[in-house]
Length: 168
Image (cartoon, rainbow, N blue to C red; front, side, top):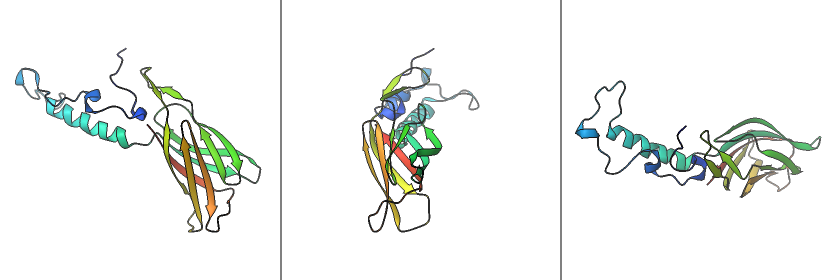
């Protein structure tokens, strides 16, 4: 099994060269695409590498949709979860409308290359059409804390929230 160049995308250290691009890349013996149905030219590969590096720099590490369990009270229920790597984070309830999600410090990509997690940003929205509810987020290291408030500054419970989490 090959070991890929560079780090996994969620570490955000790869440039186009990690994906096979090179500013002086040329076709072998100056021959371009021989069969456009099966072959890539140096020009094609450079475009793919540059575009993939741009996508990896801006893509979220995870998207999580959850419901706060404040009436119970209990840890939030994760409804849907998509991520670049690893399983769902560990959820915990801090108080009414106040939850924290904690990830492992590192994950492996499909080739066994490890990448550290450093949550540097989270954007969260309440999944209800109301101008009186909003979220505040705090991120750091391996966790993201999300709080739901109303326009009077009071915590709001039992809300469903979608959060976009960034790592780098």
